[in-house]
Length: 256
Length: 248
Ligand code: HEM
Ligand code: SF4
Ligand code: FES
Image (cartoon, rainbow over all chains, first blue to last red; front, side, top):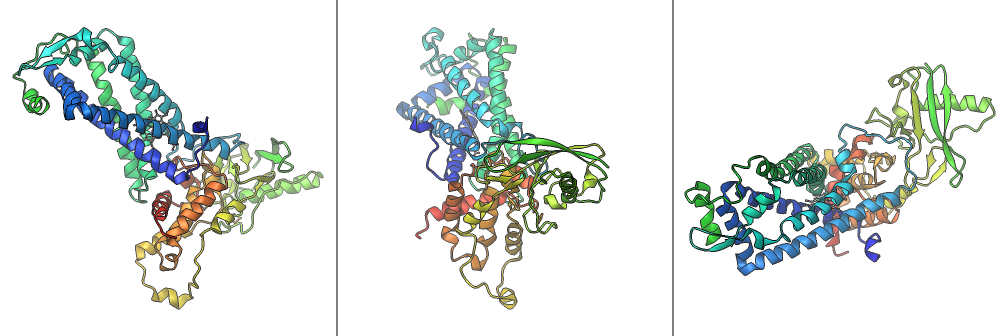
């Protein structure tokens, strides 16, 4: 229960912690999105990317990244929710009329429901891990790469998961909506929390934050949607086209 | 013109309170909001009722004494002005206006619309001052300070300590006030002596007064009568982080 009490650290330190962990999670999302987009380059590139992640630094990289992400997630939730808890304590009697002042204010639907969108993201992350990390990788089998290496066919897993499962596509869409809402306020807010703003830069940073939020949410959602809609292009049993240019660019990096 | 009011009435700190309906007739559009409340109070006194308690002093936007939440917005919908600077011409015949006190645990209610803002004074006593004799006019003229820095210090120093930022903040945070009070000294030579510990002491006092934490909603800047930028909160965070590593 002590974890649920308000921490005895300065309000400014809490914001630094929320901001650093939040921005780090955003950086992870950027890397994750770029990785996911290799799916468009075909099964060999995507599978090679997955193989690379799991074997880079003898598998140490993915271990460290997973533990780090878990830790940042936990710290983020803890510090962010403790900021939220302070509001009930600090204003026990609320107003009869609540309003938005407008003008330079950045109080929006998004900023007011950060805890709700955050909890939705948490629920989604658990579902997402069950969908892929803890899915049965045996079923999809392996695929032989050009250089003879056998790799798990994660491409087939992803395509099979979304094709013919409209409910899941809808769920991913809702989750990306929550992520977008969280980051519409979150990205700019983290920059402000870290003390990186000046009077003249605030409006721009706010806009840039919203643009990144929308780009991330749309980017992530494009994959399930296109896989669902374009069955011809995303074939779970696709045979890699070893002459594709994307493969030539990426595969040497990933297969070593 | 005629306006309808819903005013928070509460006889004392622990008495129950509620919104009470009033009507004020013959309001002149050039009257100030507080003058309109004065005429309501005259009516109440004539009827032998207890007048509405509210605070004011200068009535020209410089003392920071007045402060009401009007239709859910601290210092009213106009923005960039104090409650005493609002004129009735911004309202229409028959409008219903809700008037509530500033709400925060750190600003305990005394009566009706009057709250105790001495938490701000205790924060100021921790570092909102310079301990040197800053001299007089000719000393100021002989100290060369970059114009941009002087302007920024002056913008922060415009804070009148009214507390609207706390009232407007969804978390009842005092970050804008404290940010302004730290920022006004940050770049001036007179402020350097206490600079390394000022932010730490003032932020620590702010936290112990029971204000909430900041979520960067920036609602404070929108209601601030002096339009103080939340970039001052950003500076407070930088100064605080630096003061964690200071020796004294
Ligand atoms: C991919 C996952 C996530 C990312 C990228 C993310 C990102 C961010 C960022 C950048 C901020 C702004 C930080 C600041 O104001 O200094 C933020 C704030 C916040 N986050 Fe997250 N977050 C994520 C997940 C979560 C989860 C799972 C929760 C809760 C269960 C959560 C709850 C919050 C709350 C309540 C705030 C607002 C804190 C405040 O009021 O200042 N977030 N998030
Ligand atoms: S920062 Fe603005 S709103 Fe807050 S106390 Fe100062 S003048 Fe009032
Ligand atoms: S009464 Fe002085 S600022 Fe309003």
